[in-house]
Every structure is written in C-alpha cells, then in structure tokens.
Image (cartoon, rainbow, N blue to C red; front, side, top):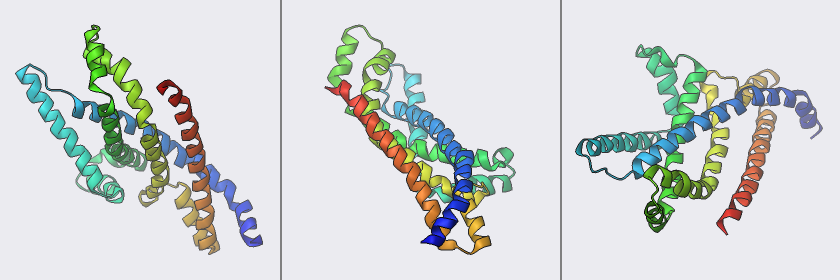
Length: 232
C-alpha cells in the first residue's frame, strides 16, 4: 500500500496533466460536434414529408443517408473506425485524416452523434402530438414549434442518455492511444514500461478516470434536478 501511495504521488500529477492536455479537450470537442451531428440526424429522421414532390424526394434521400450513418457507426467497433480513418484512408491516398487529433475527433464525434441521435429522436417523439398541433393552431411555423415547444421538452428528456454518452466518450478516449495520442492511458502504458509497475499504474489511471466520470455524474444529477423544476 505504501508503494502504491508513493507511486501515486510521483505519477499522478503527470496523469492529470495528460488528462487536462489531451483527454478532457478531446472529450469536450468530440462531444460538441457529436451533439451537432446528433441533433441534425434526429431532426432529419423525424421530419415529415413535405407536399412538394421534389422536396419529398430530397427528404427521402436525406433520411436514407441519416439511417445509413447511424447504422454504420452503431454496427462497427470504435477501434475499427479509428483504424480505418487514421491508417486505412491515408493508405488509400485520402490525406485528410493524417493528423491523429483530426482522426480521433472525427471518429469520436461521428460515433457519439450516431448513438446520441437515437436518444434525441426518441425524446422528440415523446413530446405529445397534441402539443404540436396546439402550437400550430396558434399560428406558429414548424420551426417555431420545434424551437419553443418540442426541443425544450426533448432536451430535458434526453439529459440522462446524453450524459451517459458523455461519460462513455470520456472513457472511450483511451482508444486514442492506438493512434499515438498521448492521453492518460497511453501515458500510463509508457510509465509502466519503464517502472514495471503495470498493475499499479493501470489501477492508478483507472482511479483518475473514475474521478472524472464521478464528477460528470454529479453534474448530471444537478442538471436533471434543475431542469425537472420546469416539468411540474
């Protein structure tokens, strides 16, 4: 136990630096873009067919693209997606994803967006249709109905699953180690290779992940409590 405390005192600051320099920014940036993908995809999939024939055809194509996007990223492992983007595409002379950071953010964002879009879609669908009809009867446009009636309620409903997505994303950033990003887990592997304290280092980095996920869980609790007051 004393040896573990000494090891923690020596290496914990380095792990925290890696967390604030790589893990947390990677999580925050990826989640931000992931939510944008999720909202866009969810709105496309719940959109009603317009009266115009060409617009209806365009919407069907968009729905097909959105459904395929969700299917692909939910059906394949994130590790495989990282390898395809970082190692596979440059090998096919697609140089857009040669940066490890760009590759990681792209995959994490698209993967998070695919899962979160289903949560948001379900939240939007849970808003009673009668409320939408009442808003339209007051003269609101479709955009206004979604902005002022549907999305505020859907946002509150989707907080728990989206918070879970954020927590999962924080842990999944450890996969960035396979494409050379020196985040917490990668750093713990490097340290373990030099001091041979493999189990102790992995336990230590697990404790750091647990610390950050616990903070996010507490934040989720208070956010749910705050938004629930509007549901009375």
